[in-house]
Image (cartoon, rainbow, N blue to C red; front, side, top):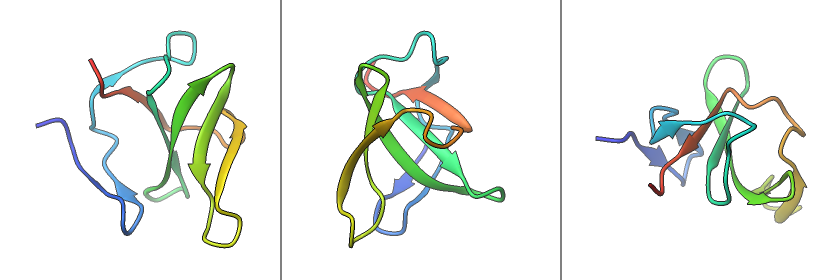
Amino acid sequence: EIGWCDWSSDVCSSDLGRTVTEETMQVGDLLFYSNGSRINHVAIYIGDDKVVHSSNERSGIKISPWDYRTPVAIKNVLD
C-alpha cells in the first residue's frame, strides 16, 4: 500500500510514495500542504521550481512557485 487520496474532498495521505527533498524533487512529484491539523492541499511539481494545483473552483487551475506555501511532505509516487 502506498497511501490514499480522496481527490473529491482534498483529503490526502502523505504516506503516498517515497519521500524526497526539495533538492531532489522531480517532475510529477506530489507536494502536500497542511492547514495545521491535516493535509488539505496537494500540488504536482512541473519543474522550474513550479507546481500546478487547483486552488478553488473560482480561480481554477494555477501554476505557482512550489513554496507558495510550506509543504509538509514531498513524495515521489511514479517510481
